[in-house]
Length: 435
Image (cartoon, rainbow, N blue to C red; front, side, top):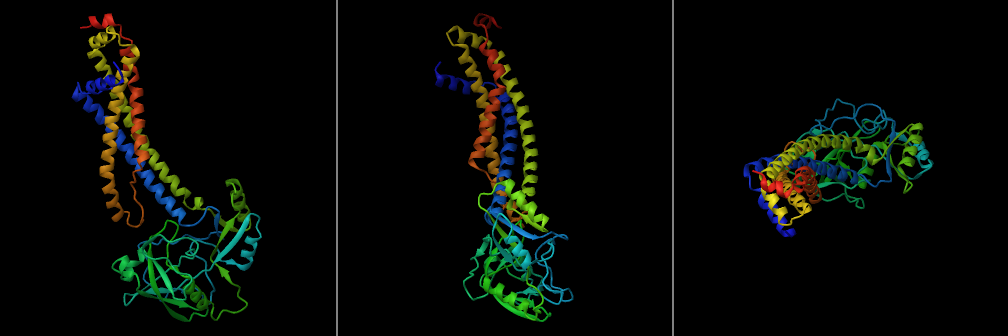
């Protein structure tokens, strides 16, 4: 037999016992389906996290604040209704405030200390801007938070365009979570509309500032809030500073620190330790999302473990199927060897049967996973995962799917080794006498 004959015979022999083959393929199918699905979950979540990290900036940037105090406020289902009796944000008699979950604002002296730190190339202070409320039309006033790092990271837009920092017009990007509360029917309908901000000066006098909505941005894992262009940001800062005594120093909510290019992980950790000793909290992109990625990897790993267990069970099914096949075809094996077929070719014949079983089960399992997972991912994105725009929880990478198929075929080959060796070692004379 040449190679083509061996392959053809192996395929034909696989279907001699259709029921036994079907049950074995089903066992492989379950394992391959699970493994393909969990791989797609890992790819989808990793892609989403990578996109979130990429939206923040380069790898050589640290986000620095004073040591954190308090608990971050949960954004929930968008901005909360404005309470006029609550303490006003922004400036006011109490002075500028820190962002939720952070320590005291950074001072000019803090910025100078950061610039003087070994390993720091540049420092960009980010001012704390806290309008009292935001309003669209007559739909009521709502609390509003500002993304102070909007100028540092590109926005993940759901509609519209990015902010123009070179214009004197006041422009704003709204998060998707603000649309319903403010009274917008859709992201596209908000583009070009005018919203009004209530901004307090240092003495508590309130001014109203109108701005044009130029874009709608998807929520990020690393924070949310409206994004302002330079003209609008400067206007709010100027209003907030009105009435401020000259004896009160300027403060900043946080600062982005660009570090020396090419620093190793150990050097960055050392820099973070030195900044911590000085009372600063410095985070890399990996720090901000590393824990989340670790949890997801752990969940995917557990699911993969169940898939491997299913494949191991399928492996025993392959062993059983081929051992039965060897026993049923003993005389046939003896005849093939008597006609000059070598033990190696007999081994190859039964090994190919095992590999073909693995291919059938894994290919069908992968295709079923894709057929179910692609539409399911779309439904989840529009329903239970709508709060995480851009997340396709099931994302099938061709390389990952092919890897699953080849891994299962490899396991099938290993499972078929025992029966294949038994067939290859058959004595042709004794095999021909077998009843």
